Image 1 (cartoon, helix red, strand yellow):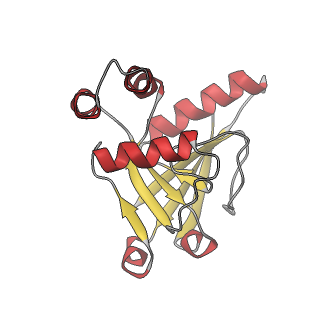
Image 2 (cartoon, rainbow, N blue to C red):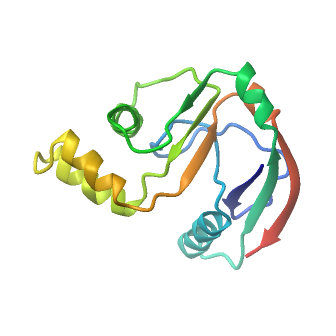
Image 3 (spheres, rainbow, N blue to C red):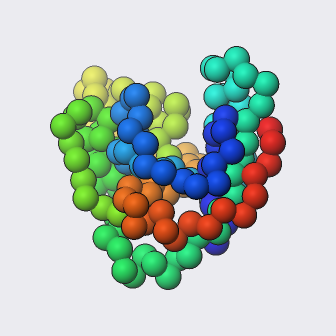
Length: 159
């Protein structure tokens, strides 16, 4: 399976980096099955960093490794997914021990709905129902060095 990683850098050798902000699934190396999602991420980073270009890095993912690793899979927004994302986003001390986490991206539109939930204007069940109407892109988090071994760099496209 092909996976895409958007960055202002070419990334031939993925690594686990500690981000300067909280992320949906915690620390690690994020990819998606959507080329367009990765490209949009690059375009946003180009604007934020006032740089001239970035890269969509393309990897081959050996899915057979999923049976050998500790994986958490969310095929759609669920209460468990919501709790997991909220813990990663709001609890600085939250730590998980999964090698790979897969599920929907909590994008800006999703966070607007999360804000309604946090303020008490939406309960958890209504939030999940709302999110299920969105066309959400997916993401894979590679959280451990062992999980990164399943990725093979193919090429990068300059954006």
